[in-house]
Length: 313
Ligand code: CP
Image (tube, rainbow, N blue to C red):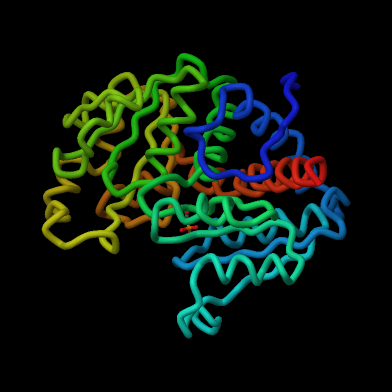
């Protein structure tokens, strides 16, 4: 186990974490994986604690796995239904957070369309705040579960070639993966048409290609991203058929890649746009294993921030 003492009451992004901190989360997550294989899938680590999921944007995987992770740790968990909450009467994010704190929650997991929303909450609250995805900024627990899956399958992250293909520009998953993977010594390549690559992405440590064959040629893993049509106007995106023809991950294209290339996707999948169905369901796909690893990654995060909060009290 890495020799560090976790001291953060919040998990806001991977940009601010050190290599040692990321490795510590991954090691903690790996140790929690066994809990889900027990007959009684529970440990008492967060007994008496309350986790509140506050999701301003739709989610299946992240929200459900934070709920499952909380329950595995014996916490009480409450999901705020935004549509029937007082957010609809105009309550601000900070006021909502302060009220959840006043209701004696211990950890607030937030997903929000605005980049920086979790940081703003963390500055205004004493309870722990965990980022469940903020705008185009970061999705730290997704990158953690991606890295957990890579490490499990490949035995290491240092020196791996990881290509991220798809809508890089609108993707918090891409940003968190680039921060995390490069800190752990992987080589990250991003691949998309020019209109989906943000300017200056090289400064984060990734290299850029617009050639899908080049992205796949030496990749140990390809992380495929959907186009986030909900985040921009139609003109910000390429034509879907043209995109699939030029960048879609197909069996034909994978024939030129390493035989055991790992095909990853954070979900939700848009079959036939960024990935062919037979690849998504094929032998190289680890997409559902990523989802399962989300439980352990989120257990680790909830456990570590809760411990830090207890120590700071
Ligand atoms: N990967 C991911 O964030 O999926 P959800 O939007 O379903 O949570």
